[in-house]
Image (cartoon, rainbow, N blue to C red):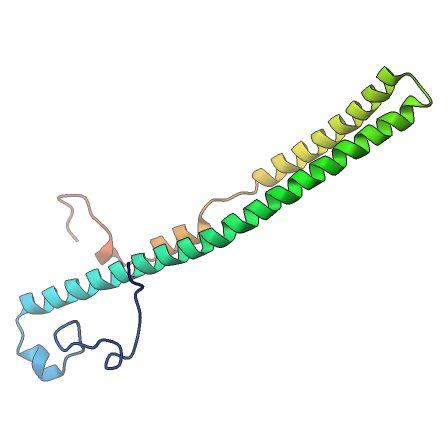
Length: 155
């Protein structure tokens, strides 16, 4: 799959019959059908190039995001191990001054409080997620001529 490119025309694969700009005399000599065919061909080419560019960008950014996610996962596991061993150390420390079962219960209650606070913050942050606001805004700005219309509706 090749990447779409943009250029000035002459240096980047310019072909006189492939969507090239036309002079006023060439346009005057063309029929309306020919002009519409050229416009739809150019629009189709533009849309294909934009889709290919979006696919390439998504692939490239997806690789970066995947690598970052893997590193975050490794850091999370490391953090989990630290929390586990610190919890065991606290449990052993408390075991020196009280019953082992009570020491374990205290450590468990501390982790329950931590989990409840994190859950509360996560729930509050999840309520602020708005979806694809920028995409919705840009789609609403598409000219009416490019939007599909139900059958029977005339403008």
